Image 1 (spheres, helix red, strand yellow):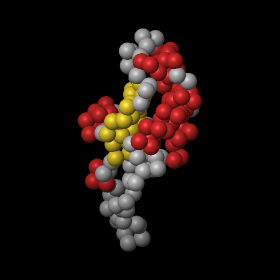
Image 2 (tube, one colour):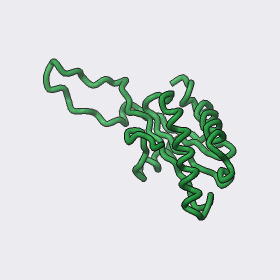
Image 3 (spheres, helix red, strand yellow):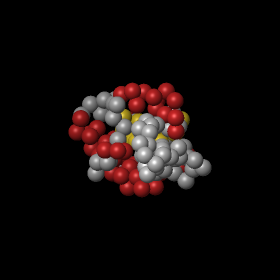
Length: 139
């Protein structure tokens, strides 16, 4: 299952910003890099043209965006890398309703992930997200 377009991290500069400023949590097969987006970093909509329109809510944050990074060090075969990426996306899709708004997340896959299955990815992602306080956090 693919993630909805609003929840995809796609641009190189977005990945680089998360790598530079994000908080890292390392698991056995995956590394999570999480960056909480500040309200000032969010794009501002145009000013309200009339009194009937609502002003911009400062507490409104964009949806959580997620990217998966998997290098050729994991496997030289694209088929294997894509299979791992599909399993991770399926696990993220299942966890997506529990995500709060305003996070940018990058999941980096380690070479040991080749022998993992969907259930192992799901458990490890849940644990990493809780450790980073993305799920069940105070933010």
